[in-house]
Image 1 (cartoon, chains in turn red, green):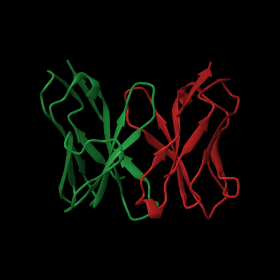
Image 2: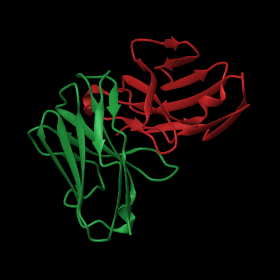
Image 3: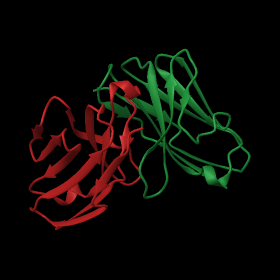
Amino acid sequence: GENVEQHPSTLSVQEGDSAVIKCTYSDSASNYFPWYKQELGKRPQLIIDIRSNVGEKKDQRIAVTLNKTAKHFSLHITETQPEDSAVYFCAASSWSSGDKLTFGTGTRLAVRP
Amino acid sequence: GAVVSQHPSWVICKSGTSVKIECRSLDFQATTMFWYRQFPKQSLMLMATSNEGSKATYEQGVEKDKFLINHASLTLSTLTVTSAHPEDSSFYICSAPQGISNQPQHFGDGTRLSIL
């Protein structure tokens, strides 16, 4: 089955700086890669996703890049704000796995004011 | 946007009690729903895939007789934790993909289950 690794587990940045979170996956059949933000005690919220036919996607301060050859994808947050502080999860799925999401271990992001 | 409603949001009960959690897709039909469990400071772990009109598919290590799943309609899946024990205390979350293949999954608000 799929295995998703995520780094770093914790990340602390100064407000206004950029944050980068990296994930690798093992199943070459995976073709959908969402990123979720989860605040304490709440549901994961989709912040951006990318499909395997695209190498990069951007939505305002958030961007995701995908390298299918190396089987890794990254989340980039620019101009970080205190409200960006949360736990971020990457995930991967494939049609052949029935769209089951395999999540990374999570990154706790702290943005210092 | 698509909404998934999950109830109850919080349950505290005695050991040995069975607890039912409901997951509803409010404005779309979901032939498939997923049930996850999340322990404190850990990631979401898939427990099972709920299939409308057929048996659920359980992940390795998840006891199907312990975690009963019913998906009787295109908008409702239920998870029943039977004879719950303290080690079953966790955050249970359901999700449903809105479309077919590689579509965003919409998560319920989760149910915090505490077994005394």
